[in-house]
Length: 200
Image 1 (cartoon, helix red, strand yellow):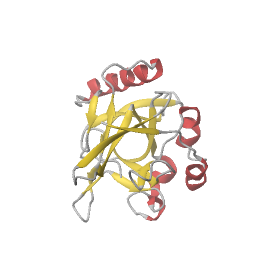
Image 2: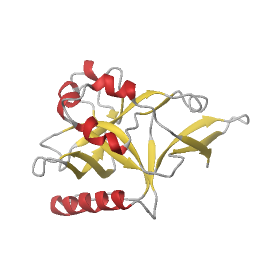
Image 3: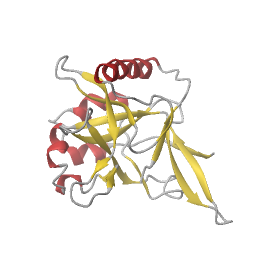
């Protein structure tokens, strides 16, 4: 499960800088308060990538992380990728409402020997931005769409710290992921994320 991620205060990646700027321009028009750095928590509005209807390419937009489940009244901010297609709230999103959430890294916690939980940061070993796969929904009651981050079984080397991890999409496969023509489960199975962790 991913309950926190972060965007560095000083981002060096020019592509990510431009994506954040683009999302900021949209957020100003919508009067949506968007968080662009620091630790990101569920319910924050943040930059997210999705297909642009006007430009017919990848656009950056403000989206809110998480939404209230219509029946159970709990905050939904993570979704198991293995079950997403079976859930009524996401059956349409799996086909045409996929998104990517840019991050510098994400956090997980593991109980240490003294019983205290240690925080670990997970990030790209080359310090490239991570792109967390998500599904979003629209609501007439919300200024911006709301998304849930997809999770999967952790890869070797990571599962010793936490059994689950976000689905990570390399940017050179972003268009493929966002396309409704790409098979949802097949692509997730084909992903081989390179990721490292350190205690913070």
